[in-house]
Image 1: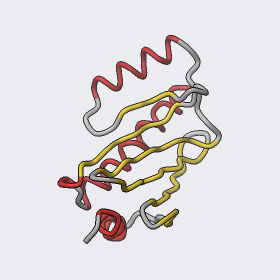
Image 2: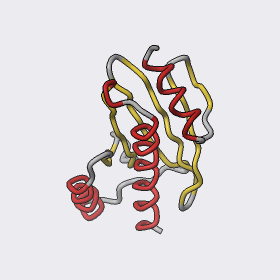
Image 3: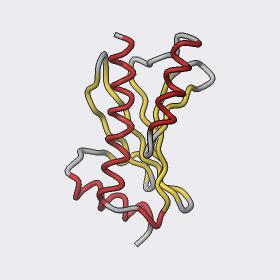
Length: 124
């Protein structure tokens, strides 16, 4: 079984609603503070990469936000905050192929969503 098939099976077993973007990518939607979290699960090489962003976008408002994001990154095990070139705050996680199972996929997805929601609540 290939990595994308394994992830698809994990998503199906997890009960999370998802759609296929391509053969190797999946999209999930979650309601969060102030909008919707869009989560992309991409299977490539030997890793699964998970990216979550809010629509409308969340943006870093400067040094105080950046310090908070960095401090949170230091306490998290499964996922991290990132800020793109436009200042949009996203969360991301990565799972090595050897560790892909229903629990790791579900936990990593939900960790990125919960973290982004925490930042959204902080900003509201």
